[in-house]
Amino acid sequence: MINRTANGYLINYDLPGLVYWMLTRSEEVDRTDLDQFERFPASASHAVRHGYIARPLVDEWLYVLRQVIEATWPGLVCIRHQPSVKVAHDVDQPGRYAFATWSRLLKRMGGDVVKRREPLNMLIAPFAWLGSGQRISPLDPSNCFDWMMDVSEMNGLRSAFYFISGRTNPAFDADYEIEHPAIRALMRRIHERGHEIGLHPSFGTFRSPAALTSEADRLRRVCAEEGITQSQWGGRMHYLRWSQPTTLRAWAEAGMHYDATLGYADQPGFRCGTCFEYPAFDPLSRQSVALRLRPLIAMEATVIEPTYLGLGTGEQAAHLLRELKRTCAAVDGTFTLLWHNSNLTRSADRVLYQRVLAA
Image (tube, rainbow, N blue to C red; front, side, top):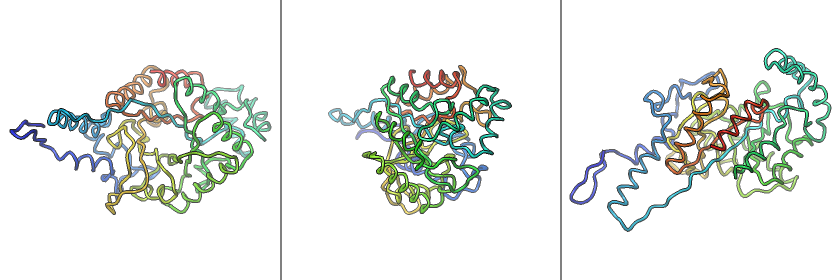
């Protein structure tokens, strides 16, 4: 790959071109081989087809380049980063029962018995539903926000909570409104504890810049009414839906500072080839975009759920997530983890979550 010459070193690869191709997600433009949610799947990607999805190739390439630079100019010292972790939570369902319609409440009560094998929760459900007027009832199993913040703080982390503030597809979007007193109270509590609030644009916004802007404005308005101010605003697309570069530009047009969507739903790893946040670039217009991209390395559902890898909450899942975390640390990068509050209702979920953050 690298040869020493009389004048220095010869790198036998087009590193800038390879980095550009990975970071701009050029392979995703105008693709038609999409999944049922119109997402570009990992299974169709070059990284999965050629077996390098678990490697941050861009970071590895740039590490090699750094070695060449430092060998050529010994007096030049490149910047070193510290490994870090960013954990975020898409708030699809702040309460299992709190904001449900009667029909959804009955359906979820049935799910407690048939699907989740939790008959006690079926009995609790009506009381949790009735008790969620001003605050989400502590009886609601999905109301684990204080516990999540406790765990983050114990590990020296600041959680980000991304809220849905619109409804473009009722079948897939949330059943709460961010103006609801209980949601306002939750956002105030998150802010008071020093954690971050962000946007989780609804199902149909990934190809609708106007809708995404409307939802971003709505979130910022409610936060302003509650005295919540932040130096930056970011978030992640619902269902990880992304259309390159339409969604990219939609985030920038909405005045958001960063997006944290770019990971695959069907496979954890390095969709962008990096575990570093980086400035966005539109591969069609060939222009920089006023947005930072924060690659998603792993989502808990990808690892746990039978729909995807189906590893459950045991040792296999813990090993995979810890290996990804170690891989990020090896290149001094950031392990970005998505974990839904609604997947922290069982003790096994919580044990796995704590093991990963503490590793």
